[in-house]
Image (cartoon, rainbow, N blue to C red; front, side, top):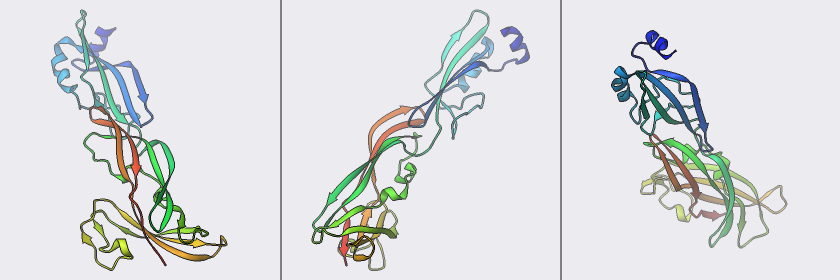
Length: 249
């Protein structure tokens, strides 16, 4: 059967009918496939099966940006004149953070206390990519503060939270710690987006009786574990937040 197959596919690398696909919680995908060629062509095909190369048959299912070989293939030179290559390759089936755990975090300063969300999970990204908060594909609601309590007036409850300004990475209001921005921005802040929220407080649950304006940095990503798979890496991550700065009107 093999001899007839290779007469029809002279010199080619032929995939077996068995193909194993494993998908992990992070979105990482592993594909295992066996390929066969004539011994005379093994050296040429060996060069195309190097670590980091694409799977030779072009079948990237179910990945979103390709399958890359890792580790180096296992090779068996058979007595019937053919060479078998056992090839494994990795890719990813999804972008963004997966198997998400969201926890409420309480914070406090001299003026107020509030809650934010801490997000943990796993993500798969290309090994050459630097991970930024936008890569997590989080719902913007998870950035917002909530359950704000003014320490001098703890009877007030949060009525609404509205984002009113976004300051891009490396730019921030010059006097952000003491109030609203005064117009121009200076290049001095850490490379993290900061958002200004208007928080209306209420006594009766319907009307605003007090307003807090809060600057809050977007979450920072903390990588707690790293697992490399050639051209892709799987990361366990969690988020941290800086203390908010607020003005009570």
